[in-house]
Image (cartoon, rainbow, N blue to C red):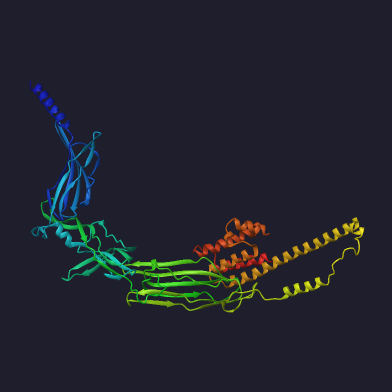
Length: 584
């Protein structure tokens, strides 16, 4: 009998268990409280009584709240004879951005292939009450132990005057994890440059003699682009802060430990006033430079031969809005061939602004003998410390060019002209005089002889003409060869001297390129792999010689940009040896 009783009881329990397991899935949203004070941590969780997947949080979760952490996913399964249950929970920790009544949208989850939704969740946030603002409140304790401040280097600047902004962390403890920036100030109206920051702590002492630490977490250099008083959004950061707690060990004794509190800190940005630049006494050449600068213009050398290169360098260094400045334009005599300039800027952003230097180099090649003047250059800037405009003027530079020239250059940079000569005019006059002595043939004086129509006459004249043409043509070929050799010899002499005097890779490379251009009609644009070799082979060089020319150019170009393949002196000797070999 007892046996049947046990069987019936087991069947009933099993039936109850199946009914419990077959209950309808539920998905709900809850908060730890209906009302919170501003700044309090809000715990929101979403729970289901079934196995769920593809969880989707409310679409407006972070519209009115900062997400401190989450979601934390937990699963709890309980089993008893004939009965089992389970729950899944997704938990978020939030903090309200402002006072008000807010409604979180529905969350969603998939259970057994079907989509389930929570009801909207209402949360009310009220202003802080003074009685709750005490040291026993973890929020109050954490906010005093670690907090952020925004430190501008200046509060009043001129348009274009750089300033620095530093995000600085103050603390009596060290953060237990990485900072999480929730909101950053928007610097609209400013050009921004990030500053490298190592965030190494520095120790200091507060007014009460307590030691504390500071970290420069991030810094920016700002350059205002327009005048006005600028207000900025605050910097909102979650700082993982250790707070003390009391626990008990396995023997029940009280021990002191720490737990991490997600400290939501709001650092307010000071307003910055930007004033316009004065219009009085503003130089005509002023282009917006603001700061304190030094301006120099230099020539690598003042005396060169025709077709030798010289480098003109413009250098600006100091502190100010270097990343928005334009260097002055250079005006040069037409007889100086100017190549595309190369810029080399070294600008460093620091918590106080920008500093560094700008450099521009021009390669000049005089084509004619003479003396050329490079006019002085003016650079104007506004000095915010002196509150006045400053104009720096460079010295006049002179290039004296010597050597052989196809034309004669006049002094002091005037346009060179060909040598004046009256020979051509005199030749024409003499020719005219000679023509006057020729008497015209009168009609009827005599009839032409049949001899002039004979084969003997025609053959003799034709032979004489062919012999004369051959003689003239052969002479032209000989003169062309001589001319080409002379041109190569002249180009060799110029290149050899230029390479010997070259003090840097750029000048030496240009000297070799000029030799190829002058001696073999290989334009600078054609001095590239494949094309240069074809041109040189067409001009009579063998494949090895043509390839060597390209290799010399490639080595010098690589060295100019830092990838040195051979020493400078060894390259110069190889280049001069190759040039000498072509003119033997």
